[in-house]
Image 1 (cartoon, rainbow, N blue to C red):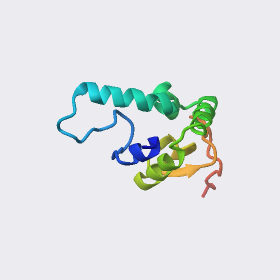
Image 2: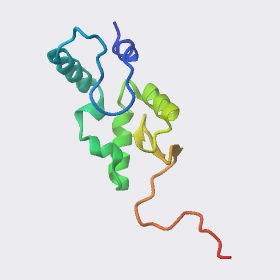
Image 3: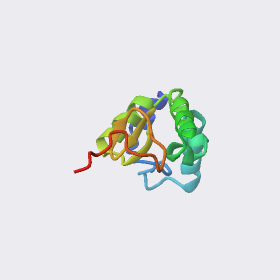
Image 4: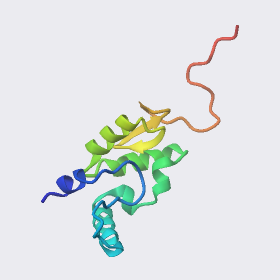
Length: 117
């Protein structure tokens, strides 16, 4: 069974441990599965805060790591479906539930200034 097929069978709704729906599974099974997944998926084997960083350099690093992930397309599709409020998902930056080209740093003025009345 391919890894992507295995992961597609698991209903993953965001960050956190992968849920196991089989009631006969043990904690050891869950830990083994999480470790197997972590070996292939960058967001599971690196600092999770990187995908929700404020600094542009860290956001770009998370996007670069996503490009190596075998689940990039599925991650992006899921984030779009869930309208993730922010973070890097599937190699794209989300702000306010939509994909943006680049993340602007905190405290920066608006790109398009609101005209004074």
